[in-house]
Image 1 (tube, helix red, strand yellow):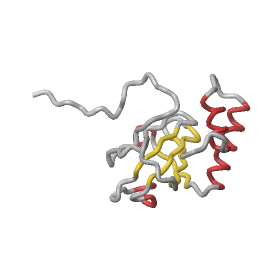
Image 2 (tube, helix red, strand yellow; image 1 turned 60 degrees about the horizontal axis):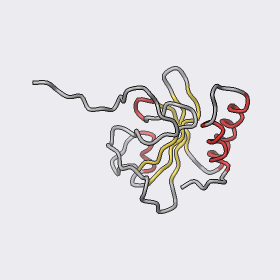
Image 3 (cartoon, helix red, strand yellow; image 1 turned 60 degrees about the vertical axis):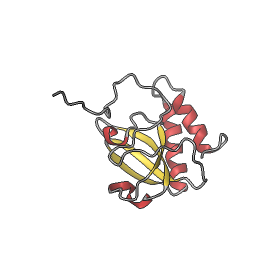
Length: 136
């Protein structure tokens, strides 16, 4: 759980209030990355379709399944916090780290093949994770 006065939340607040990308947002993003590195979060890239985080500053909490493969395998069986810190054409750069407080409310036990969860901003795009219904 991130407390309200932590440096991470201050940087996320700047990113959440933005209307466009400016120098203040870039400084907040760089400071957020530095703080996450200082706290020992791992950095990796991936597609937003897989991790469910599209915009810089979005974040979610996730309980990593015991059989998880890939970048998050180091966190098997743990609760983590993920942050989107950079965005490219079809790639995003993420940070992930364990949540040490025992907080059950708000943690989502999601399917093994996706990490979609709660984000700071609501998107108007249709969900890419909705199950496809076969018509007979």
